[in-house]
Amino acid sequence: MTTPRVEIDLGKITQNARCLVRRLGARGISVTGVTKAVCGHPDVSKAMLSGGIADLADARISNVIRMRAAGIACPISMIRAPLSHGIDDVIRCCDTSYNTEIDTILELGSAAREKGTEHHVILMVEMGDLRDGIMPEDLNDGALHVVATPGLALNGIAANFGCLGNAAPTVDDMAMLSRLADEVEGACGPHVALVSGGGSANLAWALGKGVNGRINNLRLGEAILLGIDPLSGQPINGLHTDAFALFAEVIEARLKPVSRLMKPGAPKYGKLELILKKDHTGRSVLAIGQQDTDAGGLTFPSGVEFRGATSDHIVVDTGEAEVSVGSEMKMSMNYSALMRAMSAPDVEKMVHHGLRVNGAVKDARPQPRLRLV
Image 1 (cartoon, one colour):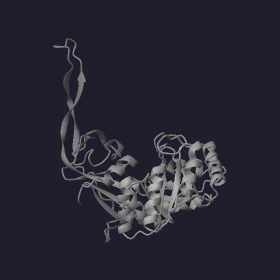
Image 2 (cartoon, rainbow, N blue to C red; image 1 turned 45 degrees about the horizontal axis):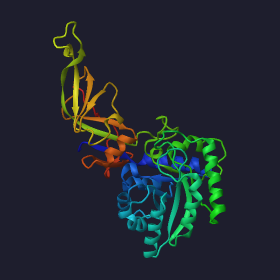
Image 3 (spheres, rainbow, N blue to C red; image 1 turned 180 degrees about the horizontal axis):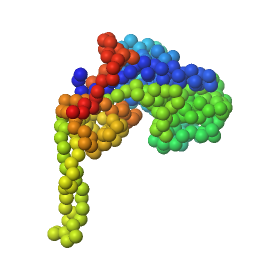
Image 4 (cartoon, helix red, strand yellow; image 1 turned 60 degrees about the horizontal axis):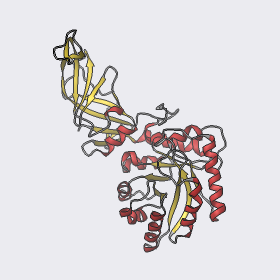
């Protein structure tokens, strides 16, 4: 098979989506599937929808266009503020967009009127993450602008947590967001249908036993794709954490000396000298690098230790085991590594469901990825 590649188990993504839709649905909270980490990959998007998710969201219009071209007709939201040169595409391809700036809102209204359609707006409010959001005291004014702009409809408000600030939302945060929804309704009149309380970082609160208040939606990407809590890095109970795997080919495998820096007793020029130890270890080079993924976000097989990465190479120690050139090494990825790998043009994406790979039945026996000789 071609390497490097990402293998994607669509069945596990569907099962993760189904589990989260069921658990959050019991709490009156809907799930929006966020596809930005997989660049709007149509098969992954469809796997989310198969799990019961009713609408999707992405941060890049090119990803949305990709999904629409693949026949995905469900509601799709633009969760990053639209770029000025992409306004027309947002109106054409997205049912809803998340916004903070009045000028952008006015441009959306103008484009919607030209196309004879109504575009839904969700206002992002700043709740402490300090990335994007209208300050709470300015939220009512922003909502009034949306309501007063022909071609637009105010659909809801939303907040971010754990994105830039890496802090989980509190019960007080959720209560405040609920109060803000009440205040917007009081100031503007229209019902605030959607109150989106954040993303995967908010699952601990959402799956707890507290009161939801007005919070009726979460935007989930990492939890569905990787089954991981983004703040703790811990697996979420009941979810698959291995829906994605990265494979790279070994292009060099040999014993090399272990080196260390030491300062001699009487240095010649006051400089450190490189002293080579006599013992050797297996060292392998993989045909993948920082241009293809976030090497620091990879987890390697047992017994393999990461030593470093350049643009096109990853170097690992394999101890006393001899690894053959041409063999493959399988790695798991965190969210950052997944995003980079899915957007890298030289990394093949291979989807499968259960034991099927590209329509063919895959051998059920374990396949060696790190071949020791």
